[in-house]
Length: 407
Image (tube, rainbow, N blue to C red; front, side, top):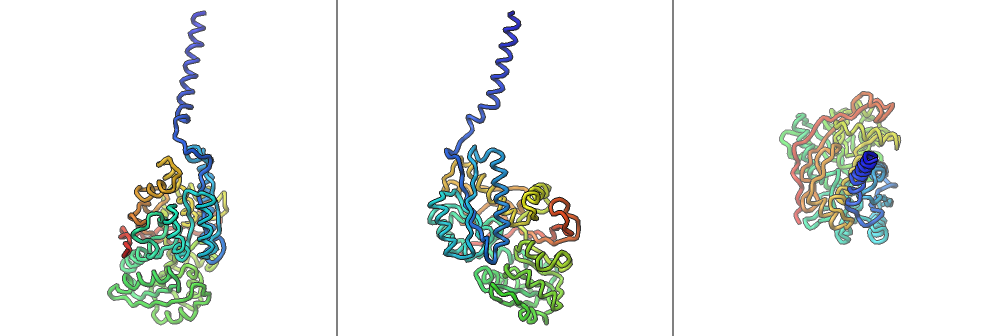
C-alpha cells in the first residue's frame, strides 16, 4: 500500500514537472498586449511597376502565414493591411495616412518608384512610423535628418553605379552605352554614371535619355549602334529594360552584356523568352544570395503556394516582414518609434540576404555588397518546375561606401 502511494506520488510529481517545463515558459513569455499586429503593405499593384509590387506582396504574405503558423509574434497574430499606391503620389500619401491613422500599423513596406517614395518619406518621418522601401533608390530620398525610412533591397543610385564601374573595369569593357529614363531614379543613375562610369580611363561612353513610359526605343538604340557597345546598361530605365534589350537584339546589337535594373524575371521572360533570357548576355542585380541552401527551401515553398519563381522582389517582401517581426520581438513592443529605433541601430542578418541589413543614422545601407547574376541554362527543379534556366552569381562587388546626403 505504501509502495503504491509512493508510485502515485512520484507520478504526480513527474506530471507536475512536465507541466512546469512546457507551460511555465508560455506563461512567462513576454506578451505584446495586443491580439493582432498590423503591418502595412503599400505596393504598386497596378501601373508600370505592378509586377514588382505583386511579387513583393506575395512574399510578404508568405512570411505572415509562416509567422502565424508558428504562433505569431509573442502570441499576437500578424495581419497585413494592403493598399495599392497605383504609382500615384496623392494616392500613396492618402493610403499611408489611412494605414497610420485608421489601421494603426506598426510599420509600412512596399514602395517601388522613387517618386512615390519622395512623397511618402516626409509622411513617415512626421508620423514616426517605419517605411521600408522595396525599391526607390534615388539618392535624394534620405536626408541626414531621416529616422524612419530604410532601404531594403535597392541601395541609393550612386551605390549601384559604383559596382557597375567595378564590373566594367574587371571585364575590361571599353564601349559603354547607357539608357536612362526621364524621372527621379533615371536622373539619379545618370548623375552617378557621369561621375563613376563616364570618367573611367580609356572607355567610350554614350548616354541616351528616354521618357519613363516609352515603348519604342529603336531610335535611341540606333544612335548607340555606331559605338558597337561591349555593354548596354538599362539600370536607369527599370520600366523599359526588357523592351530595350529585345529591340536592341532585333536591330542587331550584340554586346557582351546587357545590365538590367532590378527588373522582375517575369518581365524579362515576357520580352525575351527563355532562350533570349539565357543567350542575350543579360546580367541582373540581386540583393539576395541565390547560392544559399536556405534559398532553395524557401523558393520551393513559395512556388508551391504561388506557382511563381521566388525572385528578389518576392524575397524582399518576405524579408521585410521578418525584419519588422524581429524588431517587434526584440523590443517586445508595437510602439512604431521603438520598432524604428531598433531597426536603425541593430543588424538583421538572414541566409537569403546578399548583405546584412544594418543602417546609417539616416537609413542607408552600411554593408552593401551588390551581386550581378546571369540566367544559366539548367534544370531548377522544384523551385521553378519546367523552366530551362537557373540563376548563377557571376559578380559580387567589394563593400560599397554608404551614400551620405549633403544635408
